[in-house]
Amino acid sequence: MPDKISLLPDHIANQIAAGEVIQRPASAVKELLENAVDADATEIKLIVNDAGKSLIQVIDNGSGMSETDARLSFERHATSKINTIEDLFHIRTMGFRGEALASIAAVAQVELKTKRESDQAGVLIEVENSTVIRQEPVAMPTGTSICMKNLFFNVPARRNFLKTNAAELRHIIDEFTRVALAFPLVFFSLTTNGQQMFHLEAGTLKQRIIQLLGSNYNAKLVSVKEETDYLNIHGFVGKPETAKKTRGDQYFFVNNRFIRSPYLNHALMNAYNQMIPSESFPMYVLFIDLDPVQVDVNVHPTKQEIKFEDERIVYAFVQAAIKHSLAQFSITPTLDFDLDASIQQLPSIQQPFTEKQQWATKSSSIFEGFTQQHQAHSISSSPGQSERPWKSLLDELPREPVPGQEPDFRAQPQNTGFLKSVSPASYLHDAQHTQINNTYILVPSPAGFLLIHQQAAHERILYERMNEALTGKPVATQQSLFPVSIDLVPADAAILEEVLPELRLLGFMIEPFGNNTYVIQGTPADVEQGYEKNTVETLLDQYKHFSNDVKFSKREKLIRAAAWQQSIKPGKRLTEREMRILTTDLFASGQPNIAPNGSPVFLEFKNEQLDKMFGR
Image (tube, rainbow, N blue to C red; front, top):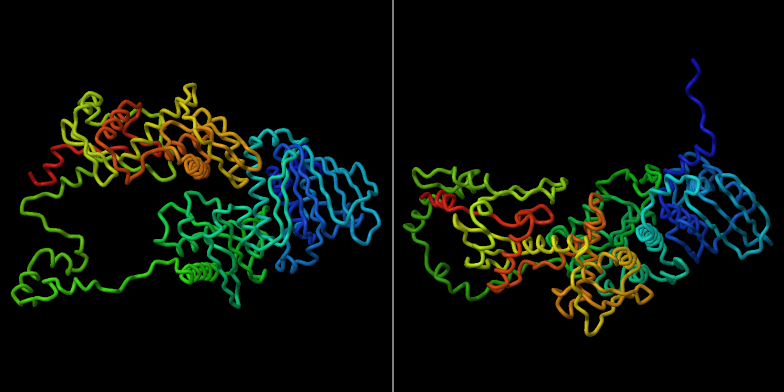
């Protein structure tokens, strides 16, 4: 029988290897920007067209390369950073594997121009499909210009898997932001389709953060700076009020290299314990500097995952540094030990505690429950009273959705006793509505009562209306008498551009005004006047929150974000008429008992359950 194993041709092997490094246009942007930084450039310009699909160009004023080095740079594993195996454990530069240019040349058409200061002329090299097709001298200033055209032109299947231009541009902005944050002393610019999106002058880290993440952080940053023999930590964290529903503005750098580390993120979240709401994420830009011997950066092709020699030490240092900074700037809560003088005048303080009162207290069942070991939760029941009613009641309540499991929102509604026993619309019209804690609505039913969560109910109503709007029944728009302008950071502007067509169907009339500025001409009718800007900002923030879940389509993310943003929040006082309208609309919807996130909208308490709870 013939042999089955054969060596792959070089161009196919290169394309396969390129898939590890160049997954999308943003991957090439990252590699090219890091190469420019390694060349000691003080000015780096990034130019992209069609979200990098047709053009990615990086121009720098760095040291440049000789003709021989320029030719060798396209060979796989050709690098100037490593000579011995020991060098691999002393890496302080960004790129070192010698894979970036070789991978790019395998899946794109590349034009490289480079010149050293000591050379009279530079060199131009054109590479296509890993083959040099042109090489000649060229006149140019000192530095390097690398132009990458038609990404994946020779791998059409990979090109078909790329997302929309707006989505790919967001990934490019993310990579640009990470490199620009790591090197605030370097000038960076980003131009897309002929329009300059970023112009970042060299400056301090705080200035760079405000330029990239928004001026709203200007007065809300807390400086972090701790130096030890083992490692140094510096950077900024946001005050608790800057916490958002998304992890977007969170950056860890180790030796100036951006990394992803759930372990270190957990240390930082612990430092904010009890200072921010649950499921909220603080902003931070933190740099950890330590001996490269203590870090292994060569564990992933993108070099965004690293290993520390001793993770526990780094964890403890990060947590302690954040806590110290927050306390130093009086951010952490303090205990008030001042005792109100009026408390001293209470009878329980002034009058003696007699022996008779002590004996009566110690002989009570409540005292025994709190003093016996493991019995702090025990409350004795009256003779003959069973504990079963509580268990049976809990068994009949709706279960919480399983974490990580997406609920089926289009399943048939559950036939609860209330829905089966009576027509909700006719009954709710005459039922008395009572609001509890400005969060829940209590409505009597023929067999007991319903406890409705007002936000969950409103989310379900809005979700179904918006679903209809995106399938051919647009929401009415309320024109603004005085249009409001909103300035966004480029990353948020890219998201808004992506969802603008769907937002128009949901009642938002937003027009671009240039330079990441937009004018809000109109909003849905239920958005209060004066809150247009806050509405759009919150909507984008919530959309990014849902974008972390890949199970949802763009439309589903947008509907959920808009429904959450426009829904009535806990703490809102409602009139009886508003409560009546809310419950009527809820039970007129297709699935009144399940919120868009899968949690229950209402609980039904039956009379027989209540009787059992009271032992009747």
